[in-house]
View 1 (cartoon, rainbow, N blue to C red):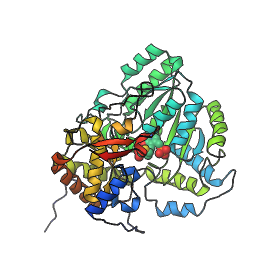
View 2: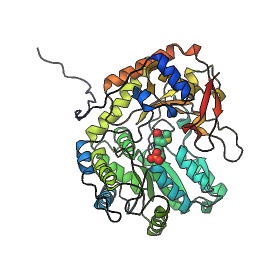
View 3: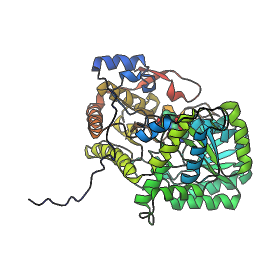
View 4: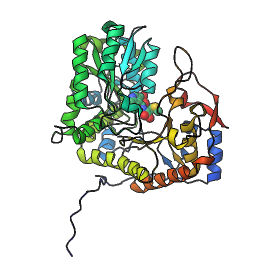
Length: 463
Ligand code: PM9
């Protein structure tokens, strides 16, 4: 019998599994005890008590045989490791910046760029905050100003580029405080806290135009820029026939430098870098990296880690990989949507974000609905997710009051090349079961609050 031609092709993984890591399952009773001992904070669970770990896509990637082979070629010289030069060559090839300063991870680069560019009293506009990025900007004496478009704060808006900068808001800030007090515009691609939402090339071009007009620099958070480039290819007019590699390079070309957490796009477990075009800035960064990270040719990394990152760059732009990466996230998100569970739309690049404000609408934001929901999902199945709401937003650095973000979300984050479609099914089924039982769920009290980036170590008690 002749087969019908399929109308849609699956996103199946373009790789097969060579090494496996066993998972452990536990009982509901065991997990209830474990999360209580962890102060209802999924960051404080032991990983061995977790079944499917969707806490983060950061450093949780599975490396390829090509990357592991590169690890054996680590040149562990203190200075001038050949792996540094391989990384520099590939950074120039794929991102297009002139100068490279490796760092132990993304926040190492954020620390350096903030310290060398921001003066006390400065303002740093950006397309929504990221926790570590804003922390470093504030520690340098700056004030972060959110200039993302309004749709980014609305989980139901299906606008395809919810990571876009609101150009009028940006221009208004420049007019209000003056270009001299804005060292750079901080542009993320994709925007993590908005739900992994991309910025369009057109918007990036406009940001560059405005920056040029006022003599302001643009610094990209390139952590998930290749996933952003893929969204541009499939969503933005004029890019369907361009390669993701070319799109990525064009995106970077509108910026003066980038901070990078290699633990995401670069398919490794550790590493990051700062890249800039300006030689004077590079000189300052190189000077500072030796104080906080290590010599400028290793920046806190082993030679083998730099090699794995260099090879990761070659793999990240492969389009069959990106199709399956984004396809897997979409598969999970679509399943939840089909079951009527409120999530951020459109489905983002690295995670599905559950709308805890809607799911647990009987719990006020001060009783931490997203923190509660993440704990409940863990108790139900051992699936670990993360709060991205009021706890992550922290307190206002001037008034000391809780910030109340519009988005109160649980991030169900998909590590790259790690889990299967069946794991996505188990996750979706667990979320459904918690959703169906949502009315009996009560909120939490915060009983311990760390001073910085509180979401990592805060502890809670059940109401
Ligand atoms: N992101 C994430 O899970 C890990 C730390 S926060 C839980 O999403 C962006 C957009 C990130 C990011 C880390 C960093 C910092 C900068 N920008 O973690 O220091 O998503 O490598 O990077 C995390 P590092």
